[in-house]
Length: 186
Image (cartoon, rainbow, N blue to C red; front, side, top):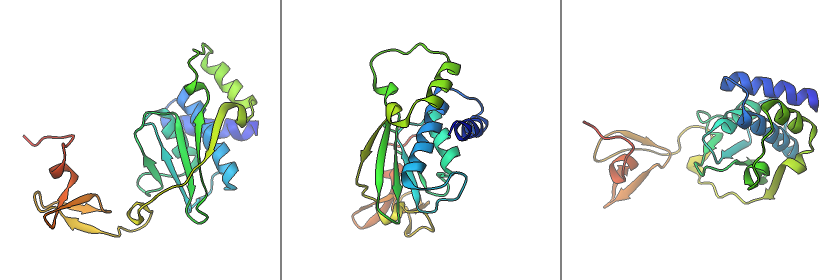
């Protein structure tokens, strides 16, 4: 396990651009999850979807270790700001959520990055993470593969895929036109 962790940590660090705390956590968390799911490292796991709850370094480690990606629709960004990820096996329906124990502790840990790497390498998964079985509700539009639904927004005329629109008065309207958008056309 030590060698596997070190290899995956290096791979995740290269993917992210450096090894930091989030990479250390995410690497071990993802290895643990694949082990619990009975899925192999460094292999395409077509039945795996991962929901990451934070848009920070940990997500890059999870992506690197699992091979899941947003472009393949097998990595879902939830944006909850938590050091947590849920792993879902499409074929079996099995799902579980893993959270980082340290991140949920109110005590401040003052270890160096090297000390953290060693601790994560040598500490059993059960002492580092909380494990919860969960049920996933997933619309078919969220599944990997080709888009199941495509419409054009009745306001901006842009294509909207995967059910990411609203119907208002029987007309399709994209989220940018129907809600407050992150951008404003000037």
